[in-house]
Image (cartoon, rainbow, N blue to C red; front, side, top):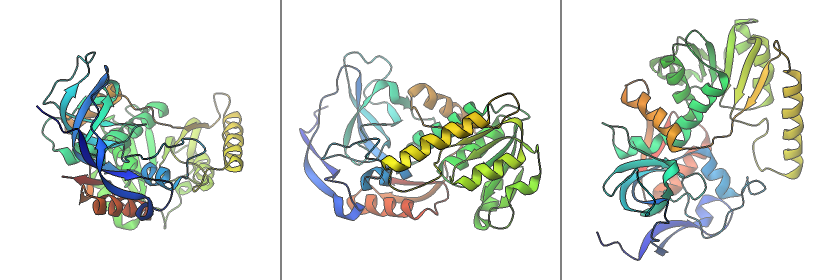
Length: 337
């Protein structure tokens, strides 16, 4: 297969609002894969909050970006070339990944380290495959860190969102008793995912369940109030597992210092067998973790709900990112060719 030397890709030129800093370029090089890289012809991608947070520069204190940069970490496509040390993938394979540092989902071709890749689950298309990697791996990590097994009582805050809707399904598949917390418009959707009970976040406080009601609370929303309420319902030794900070917005030295102080205080408070364990989850993506997710997908226990599909164009990418930023998405936003 003869590949072009250059490609069209959507590139970010600087930090700022998505419509100000993204543009279509036809001169992005198509680079041959390094020894442990796999080159993928991208067929679909998906959007996560981290995409617009990094584009706007909200996380530049933690992760600085070199420009020009091609955004979108979640991607799915077909292998077009492999490095000479790659043994698990070959040209023609259908694959997906969270390309956690290099992005590239908004390009035609991207190179991905083989350690991040997995074959796409049998029986599903590229769009659904692209919706899985970041959110589903994060959800599975939350359940691992929460030690969720059969019989565990789990509450999922933000149960209709990208990570939350996977967490509900995975906890249910593990045999846990699951309570999903979401807005009124999404309660039936969350119930359809396997939640045993659902509650309207605007009508019922989690603390209404009473003391010792849950072994684990998975927080996909953030804010200090989630931690405060969870302590009222978690059993002694229970775990509060969160993917979010108390404060959203730009990470500054002051906010980072507050976060560190908060984490330290909560972990000290939870010391001992009867303390509430505070567990802050940062995803470390891997092909191994993604394959565990794919086993659940192929068993029919987990599916990605596609809220809306956009074309994989400049206008589609900007539209999908702006919709994600609005914060009302049920499931995942995807883009496809």
